[in-house]
Image 1 (tube, rainbow, N blue to C red):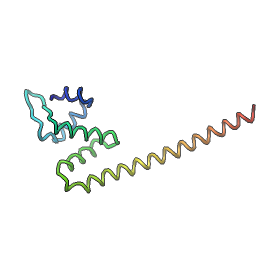
Image 2: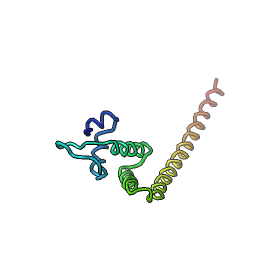
Image 3: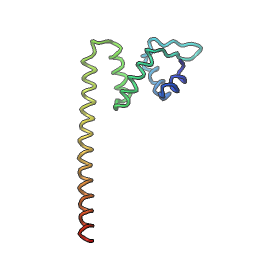
Image 4: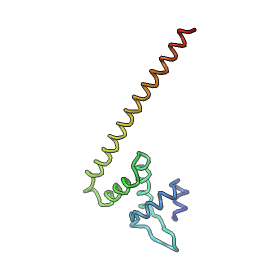
Length: 119
């Protein structure tokens, strides 16, 4: 499967595929007639890359995670640490957003109460 076919069939941006190729993670990819040919293993890796991207990993973090993943199960602790770190920062962000919502709701409440009193 070519880069264009993989992009269209799996809805993966070309930029992500090009980044993937530049990381040298395409061990099983063969270059045929000037175009990379993706196999099932590559598509599984790309699925993992898209998942990591969707949960907020930056390109450098994704590259590091994927290289660890390719090293095997011995890197499980390191990968778990990366996931836990991202989870913690995501929770911190959620808590911050909740505080912002609480403050917005309080301001809305004050305005609504003032309007009721003026009626």
